[in-house]
Image (tube, rainbow, N blue to C red):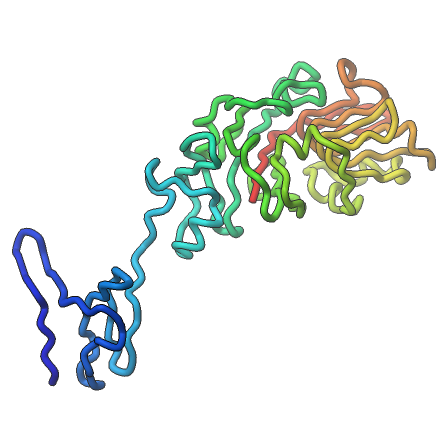
Length: 294
């Protein structure tokens, strides 16, 4: 058996492994030597002999675990540590380090905002004309460190540029509608130029917890998108509007976030912060909402 000089062993400081400048300088070992560890001074990493080859020893990443090592995204944390679990991580998109809940199970989504189901009317700050959509500073930022309901937004809302898109959750964080869109902050997506999506009517009807039959009398003019306005009477920050008539200037109902129809952006019942509303008779269905971004 070959012998490797461990270097130094100290009962206080631990083991100092023998250093080698690069792979060409590594010791020559055989299959019976599996388990030997050396230190590559060029890589600044420990290397393990498996019995047939040298393999770099992977250590769990530190990215996102403290303010000094804040990550630019949840995706970056997963790239360094693919075993990272759902939870709170440190992030920094240029405006300073902060903590947010990250959904690692679905590939690295940051919780950037919460919409409360109450109040249900247009006094909700997430109603279409509400101030949350254009916010440039945090609101109850610590509340975005968990998936409970509430009214909150963090720095990701106005700083983070999407690489993949959005996960919109309604009623529960597991009831989601995923939308691909890149190169925008959530704020600019909801307040910038109209962006039409190609989602189907059924996707929205399946998303809201109410029975889809509530909208059977609204089969026409299915329109959806970000900050979409199809007439002076209806608009949405993100969502879907419908009509009973086959003309699209008088849509009556909607499902989504920050929606209204029939000129009821400031009063009435044909509006929602998160959830939806139907027509004839008019019924509003308010729900809690969550916005995740990747």
